[in-house]
Every structure is written in structure tokens, then in C-alpha cells.
Image (cartoon, rainbow, N blue to C red; front, top):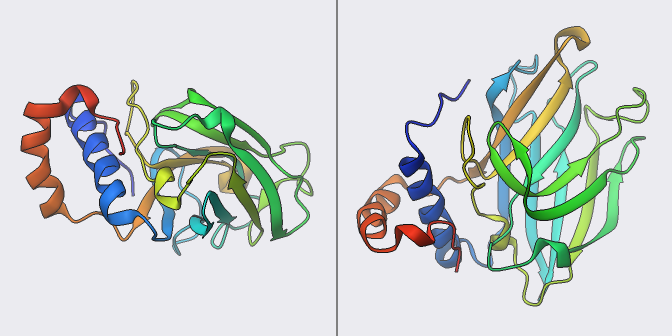
Amino acid sequence: MKFNRSESSRVGAISALLVCLLSANSLKALTVVYHFGDVFSGASPASTSQPWVQAVFEDVSPGTVSLSISNPNLTGSENVKGMYFNLNPNLNPLNLAFTPNGGSGGFVAPTISTGVDQFKTGGGKYDILFAFSEESQANRFTSGESLVYLISGVPNLMASDFACLSTPAVGHGPFFAAAHVQRINLGSQGGWIAGVPVPEPRAGMLAGLALSLWFGRSRLWRRCA
């Protein structure tokens, strides 16, 4: 499945504001799960089983969140090159600390970088980048492998703080998260995949909030709290 281009920057702005505000009310204290099964640019991974990649944010203790990333349905030589996430814009991503806490496979641990809107893709600008090795098949983050990190460094950090959309940019989106998968179709292609929350916010709630927020608070579109 492929996304179409954003119809307008206003629609993207409304969506981002609504989801971030909704996260502050309905996602707090809940596990935030992203399924990566929607391609917005490039090639689709070969498997018809989805999600190809999954990310789970879960509250562990006050100020500490567990992030698990896995590749349940990548196949063959396919590997994840980058994972992109967003943070509540009331918080500073530069203060985040990432501590390895498990995983499986022989891949090299990713390089983790943070910065407000520092990581641009065709699906918007993101605050957090997990960059995986491309050196050799043995070092790549491939099918069936997984990792777990504990995230801390920000007082009262919660899983819902990672439930915001990217800042819109030219192209597709915005999205909650994005993944860059390489070596699709026998290694010849790559694809960009959006992370879709499970379950998704209810359409009726978003539509109801859209009208009031667009007219009353549109300039604060990316606030989450």
C-alpha cells in the first residue's frame, strides 16, 4: 500500500495538532505501538505479511520508557537502515539518554542521534534517528532481529511523549514514525515506510476537534500537552 501526497499543508498541520493533543489525553499510561506496513516512497518489502517492522514504546517507571524494535516480516536480504521517531515538542530530545536493554541477532548496535526536527525524510522532519550499519550483511539489522532500549533523561517521560507526528516538509506525511528499508527485490531497491499507531485514533474524535482547533489554535499545531 502506498500513501498519496499530502493534499495541503493545512490538513497536515491539523492532523499533527490533533494527534499530539489526543496523545496527552488518551494515550498516557498506555503502550504506544507502531506497525510499519505502509510504503510512502520507493519499493515495498517482499512479504505480504505485515507489519514488516514494529516499534513499541512502553512505560517502565516514572521517567523511563522502554523502546522495542523488531523486524518480524522482513525477508531475504532486506534490512532496516534507519528508524525515525518524534518527541513531544515541549521536551528537548537532546536530553534523552538511551541504554541498551536486550535484543536478538548479530547486527551492530545503531548510532542514535537526536535534535529538534533534525532528521528529514520524504515524510517530514523527525527528532530521533536510529542509524544502523550498512557495512555487511552480518552487521545489518535484518529479518527476525530485535533490540530494546531504555529511554530516560527527561523528568516524567512517558510512552505517550513519542506519539506525535513529524513536522511537515515537502513530500509525504506527516507521520508518527518512519523506517528506511534497504535491499528490497534482491538488494536492488529501497523503500520508506510509515509507522501507523495501533489502534489508530478514532476518526470521529479527530474530526470533531479539527474544526475548533483549526480556528482557535492553529498556530500551536504541534503541541502535545
